[in-house]
Every structure is written in structure tokens, then in C-alpha cells.
Image (cartoon, rainbow, N blue to C red; front, side, top):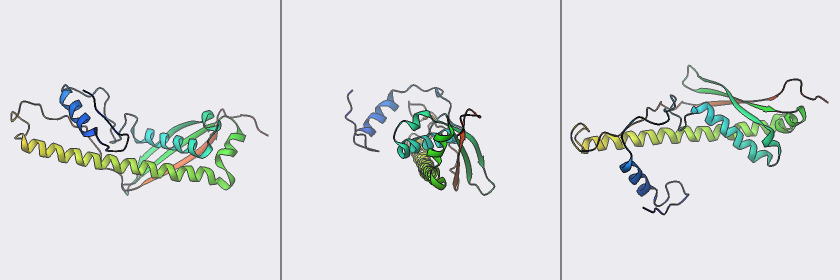
Length: 185
């Protein structure tokens, strides 16, 4: 079939496409294992945080500088209060590039970190909402199908495990010259 879609989130035609894809999907194991932390990617939330920092760097720097950077997640921990602390490292080729990236008084990298933190928090909230909606839809389908066990001719839907979202998210972004011992002025 042909489906007219919109790039808008939840735009027209998306529900029809989703229904067709789900109806034609064969039951079986997932091709890519789910992220253990409920992230919408197999890279997990640390990968999402690194991607958010990278995207914000492209927005802030606009030009050749972002192409010389390497952004890596280096730490991820759930704290006792239920919040999460993520650490992302930005590797730069030279000390001069580090200065451009950090900005006056650390202002540029601070702004990048704040914007990336907001993007990750939004993604976490969206993943939690999607998981809740999927669980609600699955419960409703099980009630209609008589529990999914022999009540219909379709197997019960596959569900990916989803962890509860953190209460808060803290993002630490550090900038390091790599390789160490790069040119110094």
C-alpha cells in the first residue's frame, strides 16, 4: 500500500502505517535487544545524552569546528534520590579548539550542557509516556481478546521492558584535548 505521511509528530497517516506494519509483523524475538534502561535506542540513555550534546554543539558552533569533535558518554549513575547523573566528554584536537568550545568563562559549553540536558529530559519524559500508553493499549487489547491466551487467533503483543524514568537528570559535560600533549601556544 501507499501511505501519505506527515513529518509532524503524530501527523496524518502515521496511525494507518503503524497498524499495517504491526499487522504484518511476524511474532518472534526483537532483532535488536532493548536498552536495559528503557531508552528508545540500543545505545541506552548515555548514548542519547552524547547525541544531544553533539547536536547542541552543531547548533552552537555552526561551521567546521563540530566536525573535529568526538563526543563520548563516560559515566552514568542512578543516585540515591532517584535522579540520574550523566557525564559526557568532548574530545577536541587542539587547545585552541578547546578555547572556542568552552567560550568566555565557560559560557558556551555551559549553554550546550543546559540545552542538551533539556533535550534528554524531554526524551525521557516522551519514552515514559510512550511506555505508559503502550501498557494501557496492551491491557485494553488483552481485555478485549480475553487475556491474549487462546481468546483470539493473534498471539499476544510483544512488549519491550521499560524502566521507570528518573526523578531528575544532571548532565556534566567536560572538554578535553585529545591526543594529550597536543599543540600548546
